[in-house]
Image (cartoon, rainbow, N blue to C red; front, side):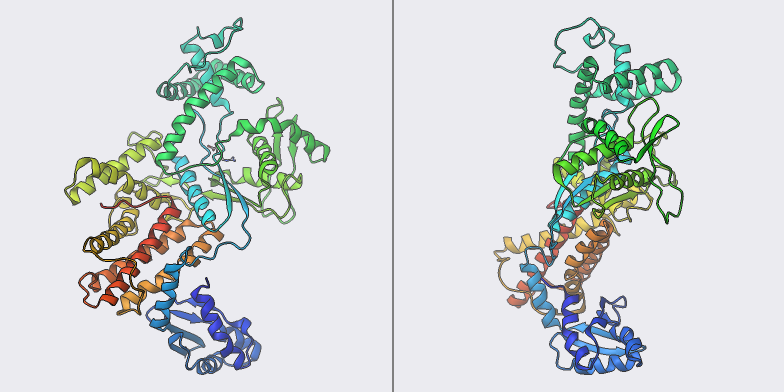
Length: 588
Ligand code: ARG
């Protein structure tokens, strides 16, 4: 359906052309001075130059021509030439009614659905998820949901780090702990056991121990590098251990991502890209793009007009090993072959920007990806603690994601029980749902590219611009709707009538903005715009709720209209939080 902004433009067209002005000058925006008007048209200012007239004269003429419009209750020209507009409450009511009936709540889905690959998550197998991985998962999941709601065909890929030195470290640490395992017996020729030689908690212990050891024990580090090399060259016993590491670790990762309400279509990793590497290297050489430099194989990526100097992309080290960039390029070859994507979006720490500039440029130069296929790097900022430094545990260590979630849930639980007296079990589940909203909204309400401070106290507050506040608003609406149903009311009856007071009109105006907001959030890869929007909607709803008697309204048609509006507010808020990746409980 058409947006209100489009409809206002349409309504103004005959007025502009009727006065002899080209309709291309009409520009309508939501007013940033709601005390003066709801919408504003700046067309007279733009036309003034072309027609060599005073903007205010043009504005006056146009306004006069709109006389009798059923769409506006107020339209006037103000200095220096703005046209200020308020919508007729009847018009607004019928528009909002249409939004309520629209399957997409007023959103115009993409005309040409694209196939989009979103690469996010990026967990490293066998290393615990830490808070650094939180942002990628949370932002990526939201971008995925927004893109899908826009009608695109989206493929999400976690792109695991499953092929690096951590594997050699684990193998050698395992060797030290359990030297008698068959994997370490060079004479063993039998089948390898199907049972893993470790549990997840043992594995969680093995990696940090090995990592610490490698920092003080050069010989151990050397062995780990050797083991990594052997694994990558296909040495069967180590491949068998690697499989165990993958199985045990993936099960745990899936559980952790599941707790975050984050899911992936593909659970691929760097290891899956390995078969494409020889062909890639050969192709880069054949095309004359790759050349030897200090024994390494590199591709120049500098372009005319670069503001800074970009170093060449190394695709093979002097010892013959592939690198991070090599495996990302090989992954792109696989993705092109499997999906022919129209667009790529990578949600990764912004400190990896140079890496992605290199990879994207090589991919285009080599013709792996078509020149006009957008490859977007959405680089996010760091999550900091209250002291301004990277988020740490109280002891100053790396904070594990699981612990962070547990801390939030505990704080949420405390606040929830403080607020009410409910059964323990119920409050624990609710705390989890609300806790997730605190984490995700706390993150997503910031522009992704910026660093932000993770503030548990603020994020878990029921007041202010927080996830729990939004959920609180939804729960409040749900409880009114339920009460009405319990009293025998029919929520399907009636329709939305013109606003009875200013706060209701304001809420209705907010609800018309849903479609534009989502479109904008998609275009700009900006979930924070949805957060800002639902905060406004929640505020608008709460003002309306405080000023208006809803269930005690005596006029039945009016009461039904209020309830319809509540229903739409709930639908829009719930759809929005779903796009952000969390949900609301029934009570809190
Ligand atoms: N595993 C990487 C890390 O932890 C992130 C992977 C990002 N995605 C990619 N295609 N390189 O830093």
